[in-house]
Length: 112
Length: 114
Image (cartoon, rainbow over all chains, first blue to last red; front, side):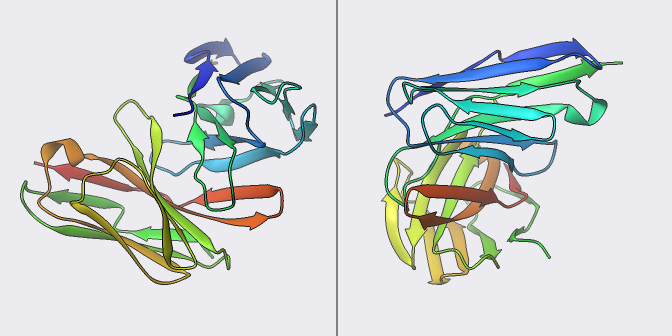
């Protein structure tokens, strides 16, 4: 099956720093989604990308759909304590009822 | 107003028991899913239902049986629970709009089998 490689696995940063994480796939996706999961909660959708090369922002978050359709990155600028959590990339390649293929997540830890 | 809600949030039970998890979405979506998140936080799809019809059934033991009484509900019944079934189970729903899809998740059910 399809696999997503998400990196880094974890990040320890200082408050105010910028963050960058990415996902690569062995196959093409038509949609890339980025989610954040807080402890004890479900994943919350941050950004959705639908076209190769698309660059989309949501506040301090920016994500891009790679030109090859096999990769995506997420940047967070000027990190704040509430950015702590696990960030997941997810790809969708098939029809409407097909599920998402998830990366293994990036644990973001912010040191005050 | 919770978009995707699932109950219970926590479920502790003994091996061999049968249990159910319920899920409801008020987004008007046509497709609902069950995902399993293991102890390493890896999320993997288990089932997909579209308009009450099973579309995807990944390599899940047949002790797991989803049931969709209507488009807004997708329940998960698990028979003869095993220790390895301990995980967090997430319900999700989505709507397919031509070339676009977004999935929204419930808060999860943490199942612990003892």
